[in-house]
Image (cartoon, rainbow, N blue to C red; front, side, top):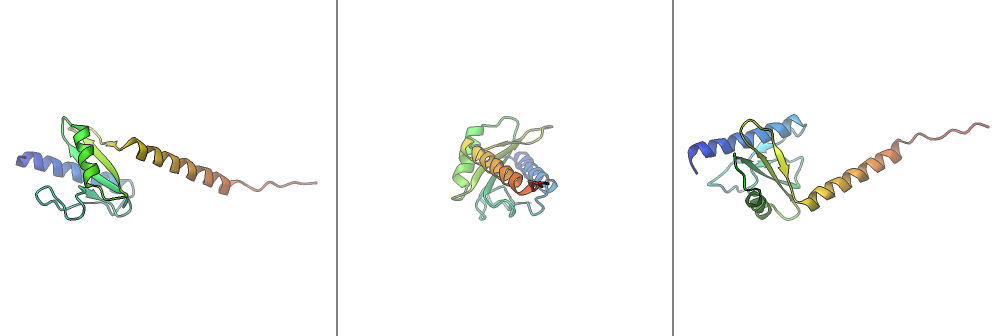
Length: 128
């Protein structure tokens, strides 16, 4: 991989870090890379507020999503959700994750909304 490609990859990692920080995940940071391997579990970006997410960042014009997802799945620790955050020139990020993990997120979201509705119900007053 040439220097320009490495720099583009670093830019993508910094952009995702900044996107996470702008979304309120202030502790997100780009991990230190050592010849493509990181001693912290190989994630390109870490966010202590989202410890169950393994972030694989790709900043390329032509992405092989299956190869990127395979890399993320192989690098993710047990119990982590493998996520590929990908972008290309002049575009925003897209997020790819396994369908079952996406469905789990939806189920948890629906469960949280149902719980919030139960808590927020106003008591009914009856007058005689």
